Structure formats: structure tokens, C-alpha cells
Image (tube, rainbow, N blue to C red):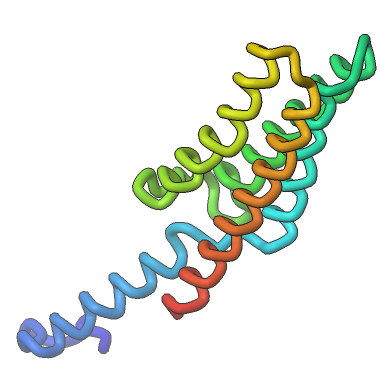
Length: 148
């Protein structure tokens, strides 16, 4: 559908088809899908950081700092700076349910653990963090695969 040597502009139908093709390509490449291994790694890291809070002393601090560092590096690398695409910004409405679920399943047990000095509740946070990440990752992958 090249128009370089045409003297007449494309018809309305041709123009609509070209715009549809461009829109599909833009959607397909603008936000490349995250691999499943990303969600598994994030679930493990988040659960590790949460569970580490139940430990005493410097072990908790070291695991937390290293875990958060890996979470940030992995998140930036796979979410914001994707290979071959440059900078990609996450879709806010798509991310919101995960963030809300995470704040609830991690935050509520964490607040209770701190407030009532019940360190075992950090393990509940760990399970919640891993579960929320894997469930939302599965939903994300399903939505991405149904798009095309």
C-alpha cells in the first residue's frame, strides 16, 4: 500500500486500513509482554524480603537490603527499560489492582506484626506477596496472550 508514486490520495477504505494496521503494530510493540520468569522472580524476592522481617538481628537487615536492591534492579530492567524498546511506562489502570492487592495482603499483616509484636505475621505477608504477584502475573500473561 505504498503511495509514493501515486498522484491520488488513498481512498477512505485504504486510509482506514492503513491506520488500523499502524494502530495494531503500535499496540503490539509499545508495551512488550513481561516473561513469566519475571513474575516468579519477583514473587520469590518479595516473599523473601517479607519473611526476613521475622528474623532477628543483622540477617534481617542484610536480606532486606539485598532483596530490595534486586527487586528494584529487576523491576527497572524488565518494566521500564526493556531490551530493544527503550523506556516503557507501565499502564496505570492495569497496575493499580496489583498495587492495591499487594498493599492489602502485605500491608495488613505487616502492620499487625509490628503493632502487636507478632513476627510470625511476616510469614503471612510473605505468602500474600508471592500469591498476589503470581496471580496478577498470570492474569497479565493471559490478557497479553489474548491480545494477539
